[in-house]
Amino acid sequence: MTNDDALPRKEALELVSETASTSGEISLRKQQNSISLRIFALCVTSIAVAVHYTNYGPLIPTLMTELHIKSSQAGLFSTFLFLGLAVMYVPAGAVADRYGQRSVIIGSSLLLVLGALLLPLSSNFLRILLCRFVVGLGSGAAFVAGAGVASNLGKHSSLGQGLYGGSVQIGAGLGLLLTPHLLALFGWRGSFLIWGLLGILSVLIWLFVSNGQEAQATHNVSFATGIRSPAVWTLGLSHMGTFGLGNAIAAWIAVYLVYQYGLPMGLAATLGSIALLMGMFFRPFGGILIARRIMGAIPLLCLGTMLNCAGVGVLAIPLRLPPLAFLGMSCIAIGSTIPYASVFNEAAHLRGIGKGVAQGLASTISTPTVLLGPPLIGLLFEHTHNFTLAFGSMLLFGFAAITVSFLAGPAVKRETISTPA
Image 1 (cartoon, rainbow, N blue to C red):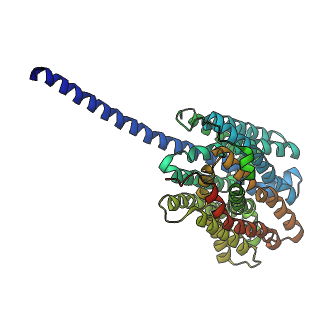
Image 2 (cartoon, rainbow, N blue to C red):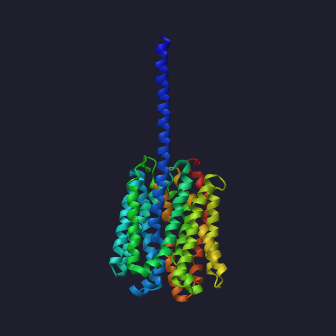
């Protein structure tokens, strides 16, 4: 072979090498853009779901007058919503494991919108509760599928899970903050209608996300294994004392501030929303603490259950001291949010259970507080005309969660596939 022949071959090899390098850089850029787009879509979905957790809270006095219902019945707006979530958590997780999360998110968001748009069309209390149940079905499926996408972001999973959970706080905060203004402008029907239309935005965004987590092999997915799993049960019951307890209190926080401190509803809802919005920083912060190995997932979970329970206990104290209210709401804002990534990332790595099934089961197990809490708070407030016993009764859920959170460590360690990178 002559030198003249060798030169073109050498140039060709260099060209191939440069092309491969450029292709790799483009692929890496696309992957990074994919992660950013998925996180953005997750956050929008989370907000669209979570506004329904609290949007009825500032409407309670109006709903009691317009629908001729009692305080305990007003709490059923939360019960039926979270009953729908509980029903859909596990089936949606299983479907997402088999067919992919994106399609589940789109379909469930459409179901959420349907329920929310039908709700203000009726004055019948039972039909309204049925619509809340439909909204809950869509919310539960979207939430679990979104958690599956977040846990599939590789080294960004803890941060993604934290941002996803933080957006729940944004949605819940906006539900409290803006609903009084919507009520003044459009009435209670218009308020529910506008919040329902927000779900359409989530659907539109996911139509442009074609690279979300797709279907998984399902040979290792076992619902029965999940039911028997001590790790799933301890994670779920711990979550009951963070997410569950926090949302039960959030449903009544505006009414609490109106009664306890004589504030107008608009200001009370604003202050309550600030406490919830604080959580949008602490959920991602919890993910960062785990990702950087500053604090372990289970110790963070234990801390969250203790802080949340302490916050509820402070609010139950029958003293009208603003610093106490600030301290209690701050503890709840931190305690109910900071261990979010702990629960869902640990559930996603359990052996022999599909990611969606494990996360769905843990979410379902966490629902007793949000199913029973709001109507129980309303019933006790109705009979005692104060929040001491109403909020104090929620401490039973908090103490149970604290106890279980300390048992979660050994259970999760035994069943974890591997330590997430």
